[in-house]
Length: 156
Image (cartoon, rainbow, N blue to C red; front, side):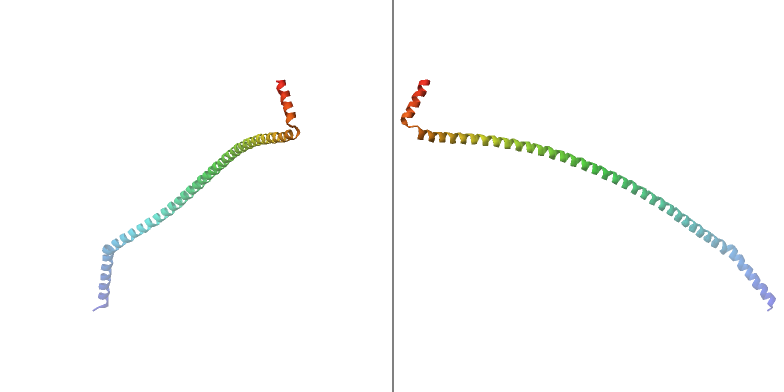
């Protein structure tokens, strides 16, 4: 065989192989590559959207947290104001109750003092009568007593 014929046969075989590859293999391969590129591009776009969505979600979470903190602070302030009102009300009630108890105690003390004074008057009167009786028994004899009674009867 001749080198030229071999070279031409190889060139024709190579050209046929290139034509088969260009018409049968290359288009589906390019389509697959383009489809893969589209999927990658869509994935990257989705990742970018996801990052943006994540940033927006974080922003919303931070906003909700700020609102919740503000609301919690407001509730705490209201609770503290209510606590102060309750304490003031309890103080007022305690002062009123203390005054009532003090007045009641003063009244009881006054009543006890009055009872004690009356009891002392009765005791003093009883002691005075007992003392006078003893004095009268010692100082007045029967005749003087009869004379005193007669005088009293004459005055009536």
